[in-house]
Amino acid sequence: MKSDELIRQLDYLISLAANAKLEADGSLKVVDYADRIGFSSAGLSFIGKLYGEQHSYYTTFTRTMRSEYESGIRAATNILQQIKVEVEQGWLYTIRQLVTADIFSDFLEMSEHLLEEGYKDAAAVMIGSTLEEHLRELCDTYKIQTKMLKGSDEVPKKADTLNSDLKKAEAYNALDQKQVTAWLGIRNSAAHGKYDEYTKEQVQTMYIGVLNFISRVK
Image 1: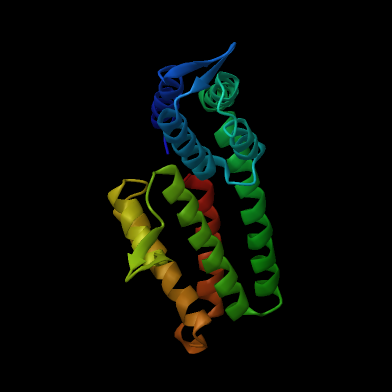
Image 2: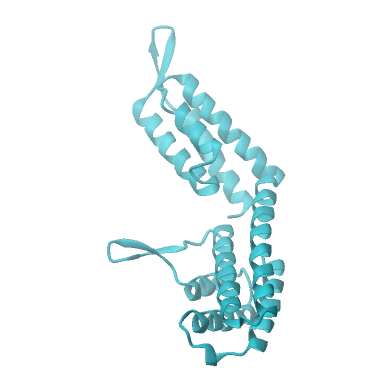
């Protein structure tokens, strides 16, 4: 998701709090129930998607919105203001990219070791899984849904579908899309025990290609 879109959402949430109706309760002011629930639900949804439900912003926001008084909604607004600062300064993306880069680097290093030891099949699965996780990270960046309804259940989209969606969103070009499809094909063959459908040399080329792709397409 782009920074400007995040800021627009934050401004909208902050305006919900600012426009919430207040009612007198002695010397205190109580927030209108419907306004409080609407603001709380929208705020938790936003923070949960952006940081996850274990983050301190999410848990603190949850606690503050248990209060029906004006002080609670004002404290929650302060949390949103701090998030806005992080987005505007680029801190949010810097942290997420660093963490992601470290994780991907570890997996790719393991894949390289497996290749050196002659385990092309395990390496192909690990490289392909790292690639798929990067596609899901890109979907978060480009605001693309990574799940879909199958009957009454919500299930993760397949990597090929994510690849197509990212091409449509212009995260990368048609040549990249075709290359990702080929890499996913090797991963799928390895995962299904079709080890004769690719060679060690192809997995080595896949390793170099995926490493370059992850470094280049963010």
